[in-house]
Every structure is written in structure tokens, then in C-alpha cells.
Image: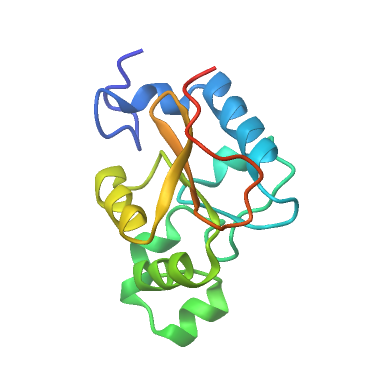
Length: 146
């Protein structure tokens, strides 16, 4: 349960986010609060494995964003990879539902989301799902673990 020496587990708090029951709960919450057919932004596509929703195009591979800045815009487009700046622009313009959990700096992006008027919708273990005021999300208000 420690998660020590497991690739992708960055802190002692991360292991719960990789457990299958947590992934299933995140998927279920996404299905509950997202407007059907609206892509969801997640740095780790595994959260959507059991969801009927789809990930924002360009975020299907959680390694892509790590190399994106080393690629030209043309090559990123051809490879379907978003950069950090692409993600920030998308957050401001398109207001997707956002999952902060695995493979993302949660502290940094929680601040970015707050600055863009996003608010926590649901917290599942160490993973938070954010929506934006006026965004196409069915539910409102953070819901603690269920």
C-alpha cells in the first residue's frame, strides 16, 4: 500500500489514486456531473476507463504533455499532443470538467483553476473533479467521498 518505487506514484498520498475502486468512483462521478458528450480534461486517461465520457483530444496519452514543449506546434498537432500552454488556453476558453489526480501537479493546477473561476465539484480520495461556474455541469457544490 505504500506505493514506494511504483512509477507515477510521487508522494505517500498518491497510492490511493491508483486503486481500481477509486478509478471506478471517479469515472462514476464524471458520468454523474458531466454534460453527456462534453470532453473531460484529465492528465491521466485511466480515470475515464469506466466512464461513458471521452477525454479532451490531445490528452489521451499521459506522457505527451511531458514532451510537448520540445515539439513544434505542427508536430504536436500531427501527434495529437497538447502542451501546458494549450491546456491553459483550453481551460479558459472551453470550460471542460477537470480531473486533478494522477500525473498532474495538483497544487499548481488547483490555483490555475481557482484563478479561472473553477470550483471543486467532487472529491474522491486524493482526486478532485472541478467544474466552472456557468460551465456545462449538471451538479454543483463539492461532494465529499462517498
